[in-house]
Length: 347
Image (cartoon, rainbow, N blue to C red):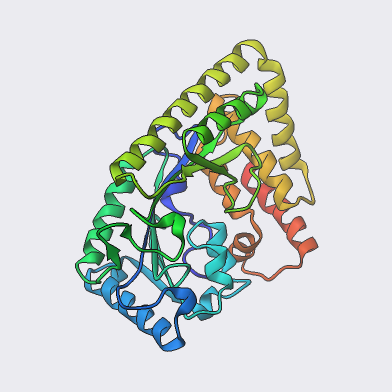
């Protein structure tokens, strides 16, 4: 379909540091071109001008050879949701009526949206808890683009963006965490309240405005103004390091004191996934997350952490249809999803 449907990004390989708890690390920059109105005030010829200018810049720095550039006919709903489910594009980009584009690198670690809320928004994803890789690649891309494009910048306020909360560094960094240990020990609210008090934002992993489910959380910075890029990374990294340590301690407590109860939850989840004939996206996500917990704890040995983590993406509606190569109704999706999961987990 778009890339290779059944081959997900390397950031889901569970090969990075602390991958038992941290699914991925993300670094995202927002940038706008000087002397061009923000997206909400752009005329169509200006939208096309920005689109072509950014594509030219990507080609000039050699990036277009490293991936694919998709235009609006391939980004419209429902097919465009494929990219949203893979965390490569926002729902706002897919649903907008502007002239838009999306660049995705072959390994899906780099993606760049054109004419979303800002002229340019690009992100780098890394497996596990790895700000060194994610920030290093993002800063390198930013520097190369800045060599080709004139960014809108104020000496007083920093990089100018269409959303006031992004003015300044225009940098958002986030970590996707799997925290079943803290949920089962009922420590999660206390820990997340602490993160919020330190200036961080907590949301679901499936996008802004979504509730966290399956014990999966995204934690990011709230401030982009008044702090340097290094300070933002340091704050998010430091708080998330503490949360990872708390999660490890919670898992140790559960395995020493409630091992049978944990094993029961894990094997019940695996049994349901292996036996179900109809299953929704939500139920599959919850059960897969519990199986992932069991693999991370060594309770389940016949599955790899990466294949369970990747299934969390592949069972979602647009990706499931892309993998199967068919357009399916909702009830058909639930049946085919159950079959797809059985084929992956029964051995």
